[in-house]
Image (cartoon, rainbow, N blue to C red; front, side, top):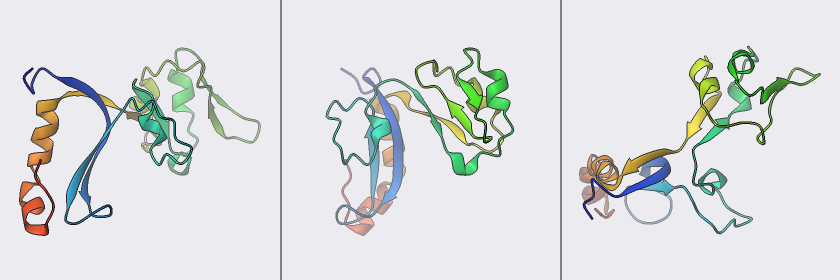
Length: 135
C-alpha cells in the first residue's frame, strides 16, 4: 500500500528529541497502544480516538468551554475549578475552539504515512549532522 494511502492516528510529533540515544531525532507518538503500562509517560497515546486535553495551569476560568459544550460535560466546582466529565464528553472540540489560552487542545490527528514522512524529512539535515538516523 502507498504511503499516501496508509493512515494512522498520532498523538504528537516531537522534534529535536535528544534524550533516548545518539543524535537528534524526531519522535512520532502513535495513538492506540493496548499495553496500559503503569509507568506510561504518554497515557494520552493509549486510546485510539481523538481526545480533549486540559492543562489547568493555562486555564483562566473564563468558562467559555462550559458555555459551548453541547452535552454539558464541562462544569464549575464550588471552589471555581473547571471540571470535565469524561463519561459525558464526546470530544467534539468546541471547547478547544473557544479557549483563549490553549488550556484545552485536541490530542490526536489522523494522518497518512506520507504526511508523517514529510514532517520527518524536514529535519533530515539534523539527523545526519548529529549522528541521528534518517528513517
